[in-house]
Length: 292
Image (tube, rainbow, N blue to C red; front, side, top):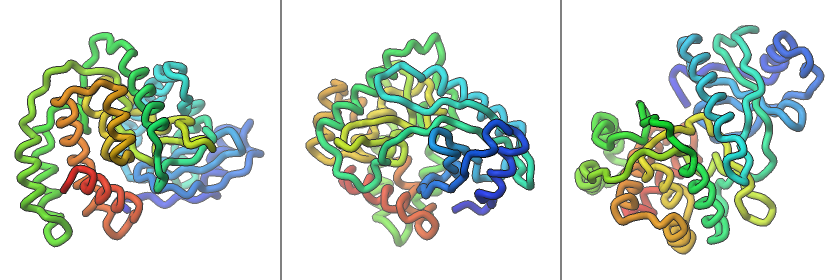
């Protein structure tokens, strides 16, 4: 998927675990089939997962990011009735793998890719978002550089996406939409946010209800509109209306959620066109729900 992507396999993970965490060395290791773009995921026994960053980076920066993710996961734990992974250990480079990595708890459930999600699920997900927003920010504000701060800070990225989308999408229509959405005012302060509520980060139970939420390392303060984007990343019309009603989203925050969804979708379409069909299709689906 990435020009700087690292190669990692189950044998490497098995050796890393044996070297650094010998109390887990007897657990079987198997790769998890995932459309994720940031980490390679390996099941470690029945209750653990090893997550290894996929892109080459400075090891010290990766270690700092993993520590931040662990702190975010710990802060989120127990906040809502729905479980999320906890970071149990952070490993070091070794066995030819050049970066720090982590071991987390495994959550059972089915990821929400390609599933028809119900209004009850939408109500559950709204409950999860309300639970996050109830956590005090303690004076913290969004510090970036990802989605969640000022829309206009993504102008350069959107210009690149529009150039790359020539021949794939209706670039003129998308440019016009972004031109309108990017200047929407902000009237609400930062709230605590998951920041990446897409189908691959949401688990369903056998009953189709919300069973858990993954990839919680980005938990932190952000624009309240950011965690409204499941309306566009995973919900069709009726569940979308239920989600909005449950959260009592204002017209302005709802429009800003469309802007954040557009920022995400436009990159997915061109960047993963040939390397990650599921992410590419998600971008197209979001644009369809946005009416473009």
